[in-house]
Length: 453
Image (cartoon, rainbow, N blue to C red; front, side):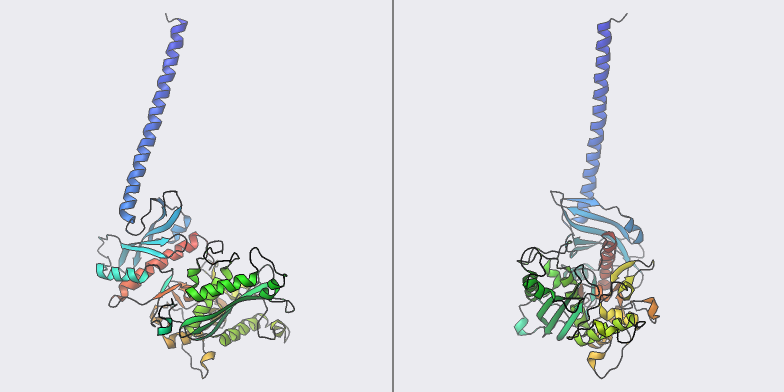
């Protein structure tokens, strides 16, 4: 018969064995899991290092992927501290003739610039092939470019004076203008005016006027202490930012962060998002030859449309002596908003596109006019060869109430395009298909990150 002491020792030994068994089981699980993770990371490295050489990769799980059947997987590249470095998108897209191109697209985490492109092995009988030499040339064309991308059919215009200055391609000389169609919480409407000379941005002004015509513009109010922000006064920050754009020429080079600030322009602590967006609209208008006079005329068309049911002369109340329209269209967002098939807002049009949509005009239709400044903006863009019109994916016709945005590429409005390239010589379809892959990545990230453009 077991004594009390023996019983205690037996129970103690059983507990120890149970604990050791649990330790071995748990330890074995973690060792197995660690080995599995290592094998997975080794597989990721073997696949992704050529486009984004990160310390580790993490697969993204998102409901947004269900809307993009062409995307097989999206991965976040991490550095040794766990901070994100970029995205790798594994996808298959259709070439213009319907064949499958399987490839990897790597994008910088902060700027979403293209940092790497590579073809995936594709044994499909329907595979679309790109030679190594053509892929290398396409890579050179797209490396460092901001997505989305479109074709440009007009070469950069540079002269000896501007040979060493970076330029944005396709700019036409003239004065261009853009303003927000809604005011901010202080009832200011931001605007940017840009002058282009010899294809180079020579002058830039960023300011804002109040919806109350009796109030001062934001720059004047800041100099007099009526408008205060942290850091330097707003007028000085605006000047510094405009000067920085004249130096770099491209708003994307201002390195705007997700919170709308930038760390690369000395003395600028304010939200630069309105400036960047409006500067891009000015650049788009310049490429289309849509000058300030045409823009203001278009803005008047929108104002009169909104005021058509009001008393005669009501619209004139919102026009200042200098011609600026001090009206906020925040109560009529359908005028300038782009909707998807589910009637969800996915972006905003500039005045040039909003007027065309409002009037039910297809931007792909050319028009004749004695005064080039009066021409429809996109008619001008076709006359001067800015965009490859065969790439526009045009939706013909349209009721004004449909608000159809017709000038697009890969279902993206041309106003949203950030980079323009010419196709690799002799490899148009190959370049076009790779661009389609890059733009598909943009559309996914736009939904995944809830971008508002």
